[in-house]
Length: 94
Length: 155
Image 1 (cartoon, rainbow over the protein chains, first blue to last red):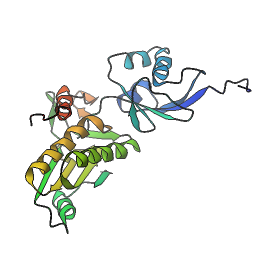
Image 2: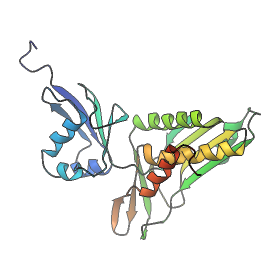
Image 3: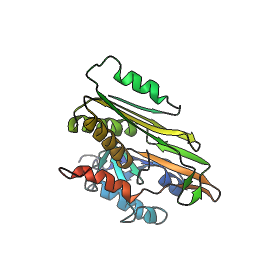
Image 4: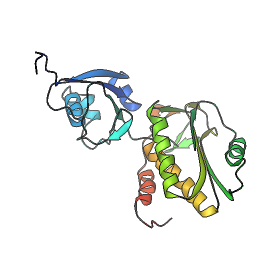
């Protein structure tokens, strides 16, 4: 790691959809994960640490699903620099 | 296999005619149309707004169609889903399937709708006299999709 800014830092582009976009008051944002744990779970934990409305909307049991680069993934999935990470409420199409 | 997301209405008759045109192996066409109801959870619905996740929606629908193609002996399939602002009685979604025989066509059509309901990134927002509200997902939709996970599931 030659750089002083850890090259392990990962910045993802968050996308908030439907109810979550309204609850968070924005369509998305960039989020940088400190080096080390670059997982979906780490993204959620970082957002929850802000408090409400993030903590309330993303609490365990709220059935929010995660898509990385347009594919649904699990919480232990790894995220990489530049990934699009979308937070999806339960879908209601059809 | 065709997947379309559009704001415009569709003509199911024309779409089905196009789907089966030129393929004399087709002996069965099954189609489903979902429409906007004016009542949901005891509230009058005057308007329905459908949102989706551009980029992912197309991939999700294509994956669902690919799954149907691998599971059922079908010849072709079409999914059209509308987005934007809709009124009661408006058409929302069309799923149409062609096959040699009715059993596979019926099953594939139902499978496509059950999976679309739980896996495609669409969200409905209703306008009611009490204001606008996001529609809640239904447990019955998850149960309908889950039936296809069990080998030899009862239909």
